[in-house]
Length: 168
Image 1 (tube, rainbow, N blue to C red):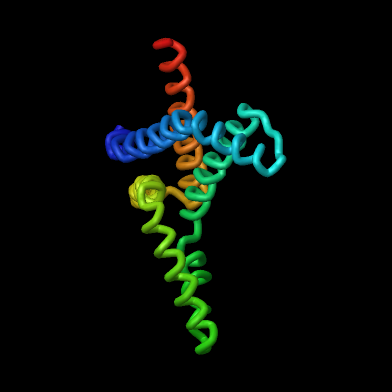
Image 2: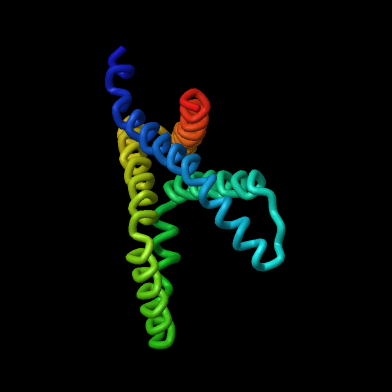
C-alpha cells in the first residue's frame, strides 16, 4: 500500500494532460494545415487529398511524440553526440557555431512551436525522474512513458473530434 501512495500519480497525470493538449492542438490545426498544404501542392502540380495530408500530419506528430520519449532513454549519449565532438578542430568549431546559431534563429522564429515541444519534453523528464527515484529500470520507464504519452496524444485527438462532432 505504501508503494501505491508513493507512485507519482500527479506527475503522470501532468504528462497525460500535456500530451492530450498537444493531441488536441494537432487535431484542431490539421484541417487548416492540410488545406494549405494541398493548395501549395497544387501549385507545384502535386495533387493530394486533404484527408491523406491530415493523416500525414497526425503521423508526423506521433513521430514527434516517439522521438521525445526515445530521446529520454539516453540523454547523455545524445548530448555527447551534439556537443562533444564538435569542438575538436577550428573548422568543426566554426561550423558548429554556425549551425547552432541557425538552430537558435529557427527556434526564435517558431518560438510557439518550440515551446510546445519544450513543455512535452519537460513533462516527460519530470516523470522519468520521478519513476527513476522509485527504482524503475530504463526499459520500464520508457514503456510506461511511451504508453502514457501515446495514450494522451490519442486521447487529445479523439476528444477534439468527439467535441467537434457533438457541437456540430
